[in-house]
Length: 120
Image 1 (cartoon, rainbow, N blue to C red):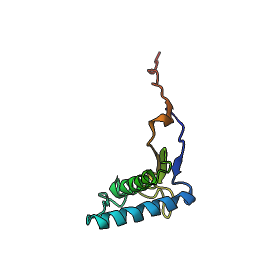
Image 2: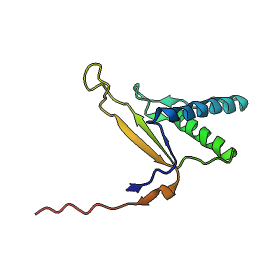
Image 3: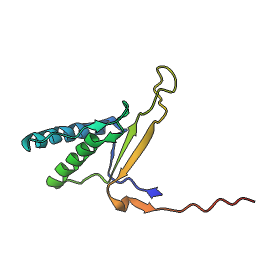
Image 4: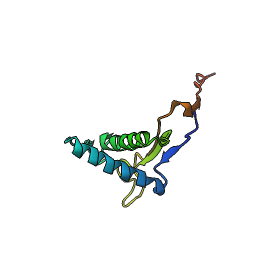
């Protein structure tokens, strides 16, 4: 797939993390006004693979941008540190990965289907 991330909320850049803090505060305020609880991240382990809160925070941020008629992010990129440590006190885990969420489908510039493997 060929992607142009466009206006990307790149959460690997610490300067962009302030947007998440703002989104969380907005979510807290709107949930309190509506007298409803906020979602929680869940999981069977400490990895919390079901990230309902994180999704709601990013959606709250985009709802705010939309209301203020400001440009929304075309994509979101984040890193996830998951799994067991590879070795004691390691900063690396078994399932570290980066995820990209494409919010604007115009960012998808092309895709290809791999050819079947040829064996002789």
